[in-house]
Image (cartoon, rainbow, N blue to C red; front, side, top):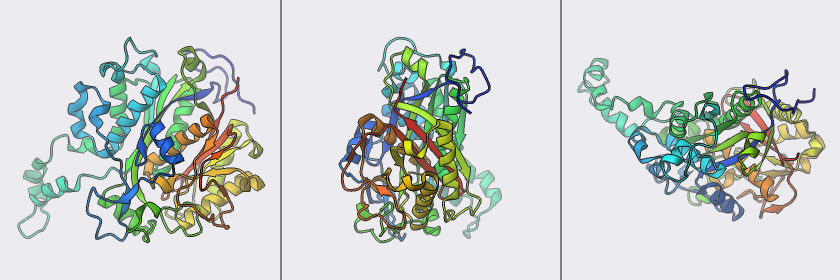
Length: 462
């Protein structure tokens, strides 16, 4: 059934169709191991730059995999007003990444948010209605500060090294700040972002691992389309750079173990010699906006977000479907939502984790959804340069796909030298490809848990 694209009242869409209002991307905020800011990330990807190195934030020597993607030079105080800096003391790394990405996205979109006004970066009142500004942010399992927690647990021992719940209540808990828990709740990413930027419309947190960003962006898309908001800040952020994050992925046998001496070569999406992923940190937040609202304030528009699809892999909670059935379903739904066919697709933004099974599952899902066209459409895979950013991965992928449409250029897949014939995809390798990109499909899936999602981006027409 065709979508209605007519004028609607501010209070909500007329008619029964979900996507009655057109939604565009007007701002990008990226915080990654390759760079901070959309321009820095884009330049780094075009230059085949790697953000992967030996882990330095903790000693990884007792782990089989000792490499990861670390963000250099991130200071959250540079992205909040002076009046809010006290609150940064209760921000875990994941929250810091989201807060920084939010400031960059609002700045890039030309929004006069409370944060930018208070920082005196812009003058005048907000150029939008804060009650119509929403947020949907994907988050991961935020790791507690192990040093801080271990110290408190030690004071709750019975003298023989055994934990004593009574001593925990009388002594141990007193060694943690009363606000300690607020550093590690997944919803605190959106909490801080909405407070700092005064986003008063609907706000949600989605915790679906690597699929979280796509699902959050899709929910923001629906929120604007149905008239519940005019603007949404959306995406995700996560840091897996901690002993628990490394251990979890190691126990699940998802990590590359062969490149500790050459970290920048570790993650090899779709390559015939790939042997695993790399833990990382990072994320991105995008500004989605109703088309006419964006035009009215003279915003720069990257592209239109035209379709969203999601599905669940019921095959296994830990292993991908061998034929990528859930991925194919999500792609088909997104294309139907955007009213595009396989012949319209100019670019596939693949997740490309670098594990043997997941890459093959994704490739087969893409093939099932696009048919013979899957062997022809250029495929973008950027995890080789920055690893697996967890809940932040998808937002980075979507932002880079939007930049590919803007520049008619596709960054190459770092470390992918010979595409696995079993994958059968046309991965862009070696150097950036200059080509016309009018329609892109971005794909994401959770390595564990089974969630899949796809988004369709289109060059704005009409």
